[in-house]
Image (cartoon, rainbow, N blue to C red; front, side, top):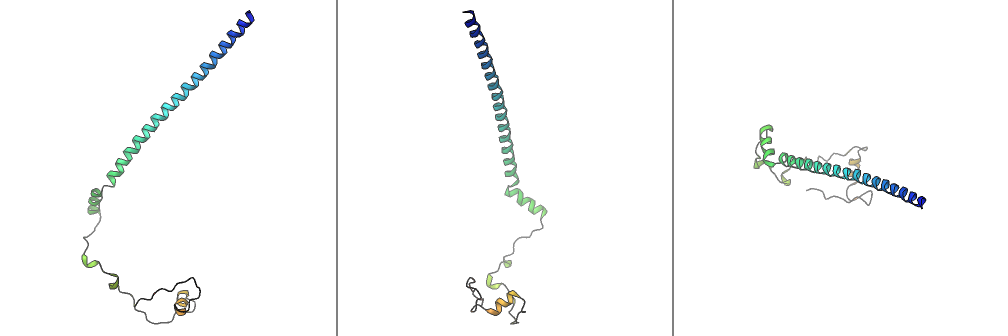
Length: 126
């Protein structure tokens, strides 16, 4: 009977040691979780501060004031805006291109005599 009591006492001691080990490991993990939660909260605060700073830096009124102070810009003159028809294109002088000029060869072939079927002729400006 004493032997059974001795084994039961040893089993109780081993079980208590195992429970203590599990409790200690759980405490360590809980401390890690608390530390991570604190770090996450700190990072969220930093993100909020950076977003607020970005919103301040991207403020259009601030950018306008900086542009007026540091850039020598003048107001837009309506005469500066023209239509496509008013753009002066250089006149075509009718000169023949050199034989080693790939663009010149394309011009010489012309839209009616396309070398490959993958090139679609472009309409010529009038």
